[in-house]
Image 1 (cartoon, helix red, strand yellow):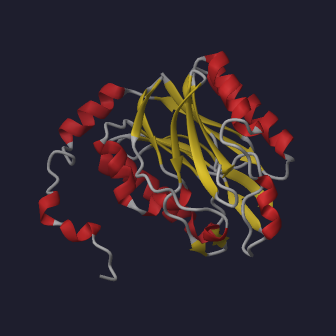
Image 2: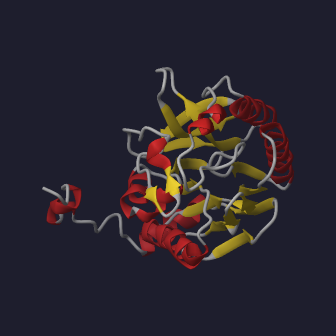
Length: 275
């Protein structure tokens, strides 16, 4: 079985982006992908450096909006798992989320709302979104247990570890990354997540110049040893690779980092640094 990251180009209307995403999902499934990951807020422009009150027009319902309506339909038709990412308008007026939804054969199996939000380096996300209040976890899918973190959260190794401890064999990471000086760090962090937790990492980014942000693509599938199994540098397309649950199991036996943890020795890791 295989997993794929979809990379989208910028500059489309919402309808065009959804159509392009569907085309690439179908291409990935045609090549054998049972898991497909879409970029962060895949159907709309991403937030710009200055807060914009007009941006809220892009919010949509979790299940009745156009983005996940397509994802649910295609996931059901193809019998695959799709991790989607949307600008969610919550049921409470004025409350919004940066939200990932995992559909398995057309059924919504997991909702994860980005819990760590930046307000730095041209990404004022705290202006738009309420942080999620649940830790990332893993859910059973068509490729085994999969968990999701979103973009900025790759800087926090605790989150990937939470997915691994919940039995995750794949970490999906929808992103919108445009800071060229961070590109090397971006790849290093994703490889480190794979090595430290002994699982696959599937990361989907956008590509191209969107107003003032130049998204650098580099969507990829990483193996449990941190190796790049497939990658697309720029433009629209897919990165796709085999997923082997037994390799994850062997890796975790060979490098038993989860077994050898000593959480009793570092309780300070969960304390507020300001306390």
